[in-house]
Image (cartoon, rainbow over all chains, first blue to last red):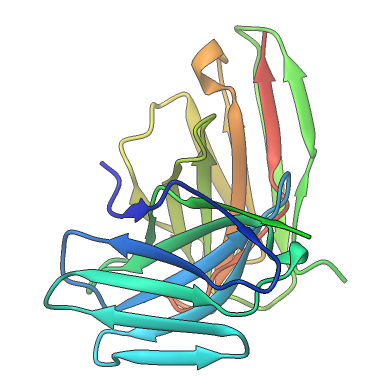
Length: 111
Length: 113
């Protein structure tokens, strides 16, 4: 079964607004990662947060991790039309050699 | 230079045929993967290889047979294709086992008719 559930499934905002996506997972993790997928393309890694970290920033991205609630959030600030894509969280479980992906959030940023 | 490249990008074939998808990475990574993305965009791991050795097989039907001739290549052969095999197949690589960042190919859209 899918490891992660993402919320919302779809999000539509205007340029300049912030976008927040949430991810919940089920088991212990080594790290959690966020990926972006543009339509018809492969996935691109955005940011990785380790299980002993609570918050991480990269440019306009801010990721939080709450291991007690088994959840993470991705905040994209000052969104742009080019941010339109699907966003996936992925967990790397301790001792496993794979990434397990969430269900994804489709983000639409309108000019 | 493309880091992870897959060929072909599109593949349309009839039920019962056998087909192969090739993947190559020029990143010097030890670990390679095959993922399947279905029509609802769910991504599921199929296989994981480390230094040419299979380390994960996620209960994929025997009709799917990966082959890694060297650590830069991981090909996927599919026998007796079925309608349900229609999906986008992604190859990916990461520096080593224990998964840090994964680098994905552009995907192969397989359509079985």
